[in-house]
Length: 93
Image 1 (spheres, one colour):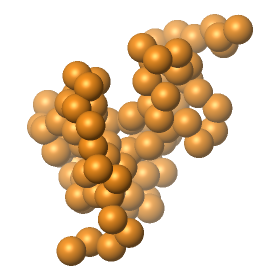
Image 2 (cartoon, one colour):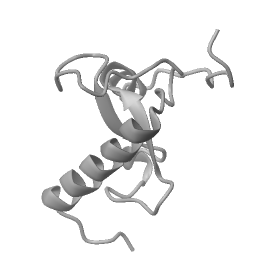
Image 3 (cartoon, one colour):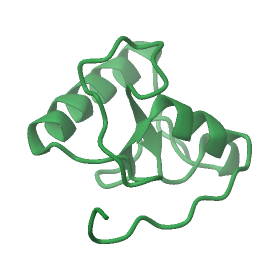
């Protein structure tokens, strides 16, 4: 059964995850390129919290630890439209 959730709980979870991802300077999990953690929210290269299991596929709004990953706003939007990504390489070329 899905856990109860609220917009406020998601906002809190997402903000905490962003702070941790920024501290670790994590790249986009979808394309492997750097994320501009200080970019305005509307920027395509800004940070978004991506659900590893999409909500439309049965993922929880607030998943268990490890269920989130950093992504660019544009990459996350494309993934939501069904665009397939090639797994990023382990090194930046």
